Length: 172
Image (cartoon, rainbow, N blue to C red):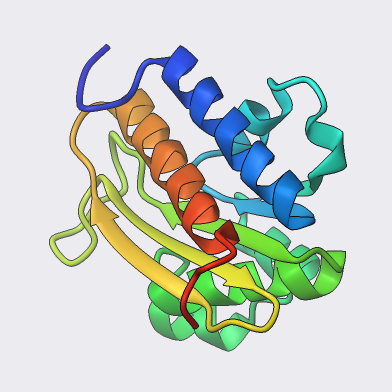
């Protein structure tokens, strides 16, 4: 495997840990994925019993899907682009509100090999994690490697963010 992606078995173990923590906290989860194309939901559903935590996953690859399914504003897409902090936040908050869950993760980025620019290079991924009653958290990363490596690294960080935001002692 190229890049810095974790082995798939490690990601499944990480997903199981996320599910355990969410289960103990009584949290229901939704995912809103663009460049990862459902990988995060896929790793979560790889774990038996995930249905008591994972409510749904939105794969909103096209901008129209982001608008229709998650309520991302067309103005945000026009002004900032799909790969931006603003759109990631709107995706996470839209998933939270439209699904009625407690915790939602959003991922939008440029997995490559094409599509990058000097301002938004291949490997750039924006994440947002929204939890009811807490401020939405944003992370921006630029990952190395081929398309698969970027997507797997993004899925790993998304699981990490879900875990952090699910912690009962998480500071607001």
